[in-house]
Image (cartoon, rainbow, N blue to C red; front, top):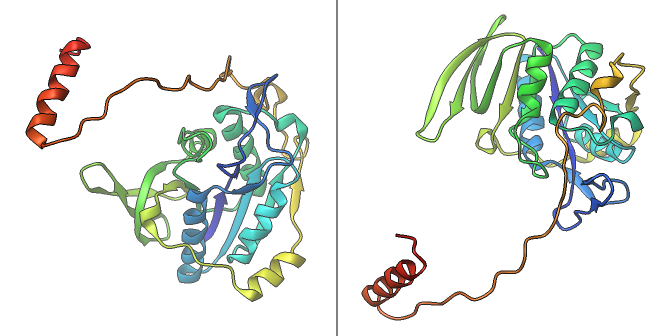
Length: 261
């Protein structure tokens, strides 16, 4: 059972900076972490390998510093790490990112399951995982909270919904996006850390994965950010204190005054 996990290195939430010319995130020189939801994807991939055998490969697109994140995944039990690194990839939106990752996965080949975190904390779109499945023309199941069984040609999972969960069966190969309810990520072992230091990170450029340059990077992104700004500070407001019944009456009166109803 060969698993590919797609991860993203994201800026630490306290270190987010925006390039004023391109309106894209500044990643170079910024303290970054593995997207938290991707840690659950990594853990699930390793657990599948431990139960069914096979290998776990991680693939990520980004600047040179992404190598640090890829080495961290090896310390968590991943067998192979692939870095898609080329300045031509910079500024990609979700569609261009999904296209690029899909081309990297095609070059890697020999996979049964692709796992992604449900979304990235810097964009929160939850679009890249499904986009990869579309690019590869394989089935997908999103928001997976538990893998019940994996057979030779099929997989059965629990998909989380607002009301509970659905049990869905899909054909392999397949792409899954997972939620944090699926497992508890492990900490790196000493042996894993030593392995990560010595590991060779495979690096592929745009030419290596045979992309069509009109579909990658900022120029290949159909969605463009026109302007980024901080909202003005909120002013005024009123704090209600007192007995609950009294506060309800005052709140209703304030809403009527503002013509909410």
